[in-house]
Amino acid sequence: MLRNNERFLKSSEMLALIRLEKQMMKITEVKVYTVKNREREKRLCAYATIVFDNCFIVRDLKIVKGVDGLFISMPSRRSKFGTFRDIAHPLNAAMRGEIERAIFAEYDKVVNQNPSGEGQSENFEDSYDME
Image 1 (tube, rainbow, N blue to C red):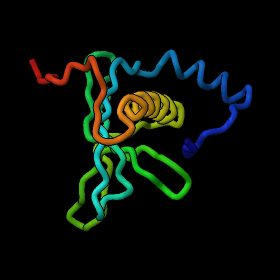
Image 2 (image 1 turned 135 degrees about the vertical axis):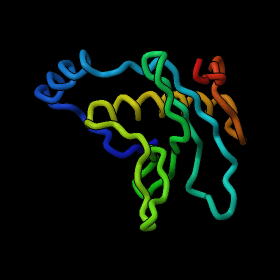
Image 3 (image 1 turned 180 degrees about the vertical axis):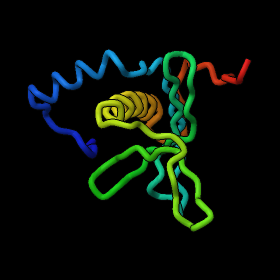
Image 4 (image 1 turned 90 degrees about the horizontal axis):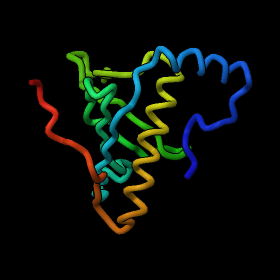
């Protein structure tokens, strides 16, 4: 499938990614829940949950069909002015790329396991609550 921002990296970009990798949080778990498209939500394909370093979880990321292919929408809420603001989001392109790669890989796995309808990731501990 075609995805936004997929391209070949220049060597200078690769070096920047290698430097950033040492500073970035590691993605330790990803879970994807596909949804059956309803008439008014034909663009929404799935929800995702992602865990960083086994200690920080972000829920309600969305996998959405856009004009140019699939993209990841970060969790957001409507402000008092009617605009939407991300609740959590990556601060650089390298981390965004890592998040997209991890979620799309899990999404492809789930869709290939159950191409006809709803499905979800296997082997994911969904009882992450504060201790």
